[in-house]
Image (cartoon, rainbow, N blue to C red; front, side, top):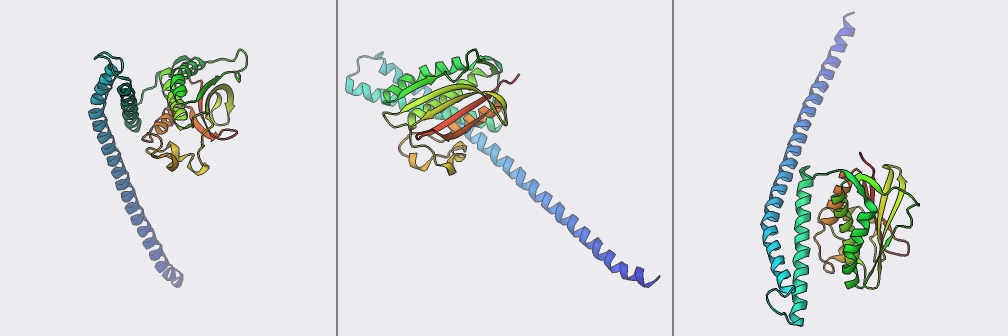
Length: 280
């Protein structure tokens, strides 16, 4: 009766010590994790503040510069010789590209802060696809490409109206088509295809494929192209860009409760698919 309790006392003390050590270690780890989370939040806030400041300071002068370039290109300030006119058009294009990058950075900053708005309306997505194809057809032709819109995959009488944000859909689709045109070699084809289907994760969706017959994207990099400021190494220096367009496009797609997927184009190239559910 005496020996057994006496033998259990050291074991109880050891167990109590182990519990105390575990509790202390847990508290220390919790504090470390909290400090790490706070540091990450502070870094994200600083990054967003910096991005807001820089983009604000760039956007207004760039817009003014493009306005002057437009006036020169239109001859509002007098006739422009052909050799200079080509330079002015190139200047206007470069300013427009830079301004688009600034706008993407603004959206990226808003997305990080949860400030991107979505206004859901009854939207004819195929009509938007038709308009985007028309908007970028001149750009494709000047690059020596064909831009083809294919709606034959839509079953006869299939609904093309869904509840989504038409402005955001146009923004994402325009980004995908613009990228396809920029990265497809002269003589190639960019195809825009609309289809209704079912997705394992999202259920019934209306999909918009943007397929090119360019160099394609290696499989190990297919998720990385959606990261901020990442660009496929082979394209750096050959195509202008900051690597933020696809990052904001996927964030917007997911904000619409859809997604963007990437796969190979049969015969070579890359196909980006925008999936849009009918969200009410």
